[in-house]
Image (cartoon, rainbow, N blue to C red; front, side, top):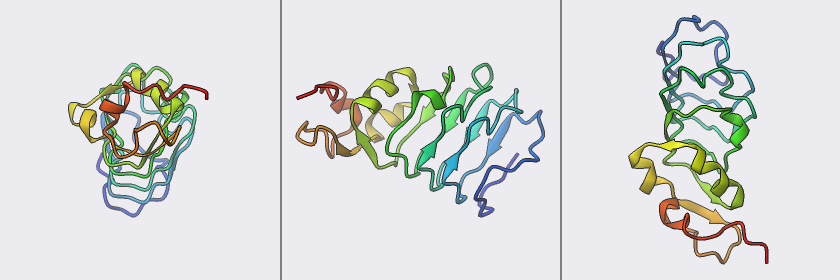
Length: 152
């Protein structure tokens, strides 16, 4: 189902439950609420790229663990990830083009994701904590060798 470039500010409620591909790219979505896609048990591909997403609520992708194969969250406003948003989803994911804040939370969330190869170098730390970690401006692939969970 193609819902691209429709100026949507929330996920449509009338998506057929047999939808396998859902394109919500180039809209105005700012968050994904819990259970947003739980009525779509066959959904294999979800494109949320080029929105204004800053928040993925815990349970945002609930119900998709068995079916989702590809998730595109590129070119949004995501700075961090809550692992509880994914609830077992192991889909190949594209997370490039977001202003990531590289810290302990992000460092512990990323190992649970199957990142698209382009994401490995395209996830850039815009900010970091601790701020003197050397991660700022560095691809997360390189920053992952830094221990961002050190308490000083």
